[in-house]
Structures are given as C-alpha cells and as structure tokens.
Image (cartoon, rainbow, N blue to C red; front, top):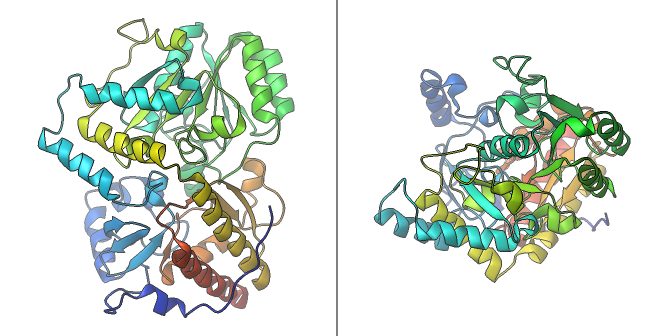
Amino acid sequence: MARRQFRGGFKPVAALLCDPMGEQSTDGRAGDRSRTLLQRASRVIPGGVNSPVRAFASVGGDPPFVTKAEGAYLHTEDGAKLIDYVGTWGPALLGHARPEVIEAVVKAARDGLSFGAATSAEAEFAELVTSMVPSLNGGMLRMVNSGTEATMSALRLARGFTGRAKIVKMDGGYHGHADVLLVAAGSGAATLGIPGSAGVPDSVVADTLLLPFNDVEALEAMCTAQGDALAAIIVEPIAGNMGVIPPDEGYLERMRALCDKHGIVLIFDEVMTGFRVAKGGAQERYGVTPDLTCLGKIVGGGMPVGAYGGRRDIMEKIAPLGPVYQAGTLSGNPLGVAAGLATLQLIEQDPPYEALERSAARLFDGLSQSAAKAGVALTGNRVGAMFTGFFQDGAVHNYEDAKRSNTERFGQFHQEMLARGVYLAPSQFEAAFVSTAHDDSIIDTTLAAADEAFAAIARNA
C-alpha cells in the first residue's frame, strides 16, 4: 500500500489528551482503583474478567476498568480518557453511544425488556439485513444472541442440509467457543498459549479438519480427498483472529468453485467483517457469495445480537419449517433489534466507508512510518477500517506467519501506548478498529503517541 509522509509539528501528547479542566489523566494504565476492582472481581470471577481476551497477561500490567464510553473514547475508573481502537471488539463502527442508537434502545426498553414472542421489528430487521448482504438477497435470516451461536447453528444447519458430518476450518481461525470449532482457534487462545481447550473431547472434533489460510493447493487437495464427505467449509473471508490477514487473490474464488463442485456448503463468518469493510461485508468487497453468512457485532449495534442466513433452500431446513432444531429464548430481543436497526439504518442512509477508508489508511500508514523511523520491525495488514501491525519483518499470509511476531515487543508497545492514552487490544493476534468518531485530531494524537512509543521501544532495545 502507498505510504504517506509522517507529519510532524504535533503538540505534546499530554496536552492533546487532557481536557480543558485538566481532570483527565494521560496515563491509561491501571491505577489503584482498577487494581482494587480487579482483586475484588478475581474473588468471584475467574481471572477477574468475563472473557479471557480482556485480561492483560500477555502485555503486562492489569486491565483498566471502564466506567463509560462515548465517541472514540473510553473513560476509566482511574480518571483516564483513552482513545479506543478496540471498539468493543468491532461493533462500534459509528463510535460509542451514538445518540440515535441509544435513543432507539431507550424507547424500546420502555415497552419491556423481553417478550419471548414475535414482534414487527424482527421482520423489519430481517428485511433490512437481507437487503444489504449479498448472500442473503432472496434468502432468509435467523436471529440469535452471539457470533458463537450463529456459527454453531450454521454448521448444524449445513450438516442437516447435506447429510454429511465433516467440516473444514482454517488454522488460527476463531469462530466462537463451540466445542466443534475450538481447535487451532487463534486470537484469545493463541494469546493465552492454549492450543485448543480442556473439556473438548477428541471425539467432538474428530470431524473438524484443518487447513492453512490462503493455501489454495491444500484446499484443492482436501476437496479432492474428502469433498464428498464435507458438509461445510467455514472461513473468515478476512481473517481477524490471527491478526488481520486478507485473502490472497483468487483464494475465495477457488474456494467457492470447489464447494460448488463437491456440494459443500460455504459459510462466511462475517461476525467481524460484516458491515465493517463494506456495507455488504467482505463478500461484497471481494465479489464472492457464500451459501450461508454468520453475523454479529455491528449487526446488533453494540447489543448481544448474532444472526445467520443465506440460501432459502438451506434455511428452510430450520425448525419449525424443517428438521434442524435451533432455538433461543432471547433471540430477537427487542432491545437488540432496536439497536441493530438504528445502526444499520444509519449505515444505509449515509454509508461511512469512504471516510473510514481514508482515516484508517492515514493511521495505518503513519504507524508504519513511525516504526520505520525508530528502526522497529513492523509489518502490517489493513482492509478497510480494520488492521493489525505485526512486530516482525516479512509479509503475513497465514497463522504460521503471524506466530513469528515478537509478542514481547508488542506488549511493550501496548504499554507505551496505554501510558499515552491510547487503548489497543491486549493481544498481538487481534484487530484494531477505526470508527467514524476517529476524526483527524484523534488520529493526529494517536500518531504522536505512537512516535513516542516506538522511540521508547528503540531506546530500550
């Protein structure tokens, strides 16, 4: 990708991060209040966190506890105001606490938090989503409560539709914590050094086959040997849980052709990429249409919502129309539907993707230039408003490449950035996300912090 010149002349980072009253800290590292809360939580919550990716074991220190989020910022219990590039792990495309979304949720809440019955908003939601995502055009959608539910339900559906048992996933691809998928799962598991998970019997994953991402030859060999036994291939079209890794040219197209040839259901896990890299997700960006698509994160506007859908003939196999059972008391929850509808309507009315592309490119290129200036090895991948900087030399095309990254160096960078008020995911193997709330001044501040952080790393090398 083209690189832009690093622009100097920034104000000191501390001055840019403080509010006019001087009440906000420039240091986002956990202070006494967060450490006390972590100790309290650890007595009743494993590790003190309700998802392992929130722990800071791989980057050092303790996690800051958050009190609220607005726009591009998080506010912590220790009084810090942090520029946020985690974005609740992807959903905050329009920034945190977007007023239209909050208002929609508050209005829905006044009528009740949950009904366990059908509502008109669910149909409106499904109509909007199916109009936006290519694989859902003319097809059907089923709402669930998380990306994990979406992927495990889609795989059950693929098996029920084909009458076959075996599935294929990519080494380092993460599709939620369902037993059948929790093998070579990348992301949080990679950060913690867990190859799979205890509690998953060998028999459960016996029919889960692994392939390296972006390896067309391995894909073709697998389909030649096992094609008639494969129910589905599930893939993140843009890998995001081994760090951001785009598909090589022709890779998804060849996958689509092989699935057609062998009667395999092609499932795109667009929980992360859906509505982020394009209005219709990665499938719109690359022009490859899967049979089923799994959605989460942005589709719920920040609420715990997931969905899966696709070809009508496949979706009609789901109960109550067909023999594949899947249910959920809170599926189609009115608050989640309200948040999702409000978010997707905003995207539909005023697509943000050109502006996001410019902002993310400016940030990504500036980080690359800062690293090069400091002599710190860094290679990066970016697609739209998501990116990862890998602390290594050489291109990153798959999980094996990603694992060569210097995770200790990443941990140093994470701490240096946090000390300067920039909040990144506490893992080398995660994506960073840019939102519409990250304006030029915020990116200027981030790049100034990165310039100082890379220089500090170089001094301490």
